[in-house]
Image 1 (tube, rainbow, N blue to C red):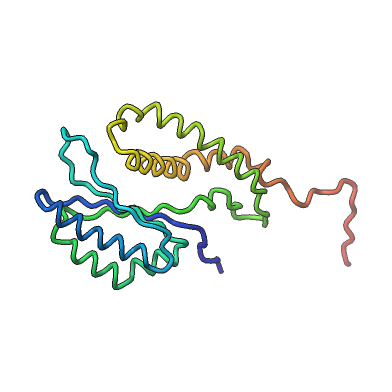
Image 2 (spheres, helix red, strand yellow):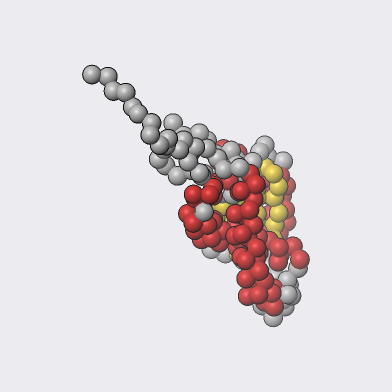
Length: 201
């Protein structure tokens, strides 16, 4: 029987406000975020407003919520507080909400199915994580630096960190752990040369 997830998880919910109803949407979303922040197991919640570029009329908002584990997230998703908040916001939403769950980073370094292996030392995890994050962040800055320059600092950090987590989780980290697996998970029981095995008749 598998153990429940105990690492933090992120929930990213994107909703587009109906044009002309942004004020009502923001007011109700502020109440929704407040309810999420005080919910048991919630580590924090924040509403990200559309970009400040006046040339682009966008009404897409992002709510980012962090929970201590998958069980806390599930409890929030099934709660009366969330149901009431979602119902109050529904009349001011243009189109369906887009919900994305982003797992914590611990599962990058979980041993693969097969013979039981211990977890790698934390310093090895830190080295491999840095080897993946540094070039990923550097490349994102080169590609998006000028595009994101007009955005607020919070919005830039929010987008970049979400992109880093996504790229690391489904791209860079699996490749690094596969490449460095002999170093991360060295054999704990090396075979002894010349050892004899007694077999019962």
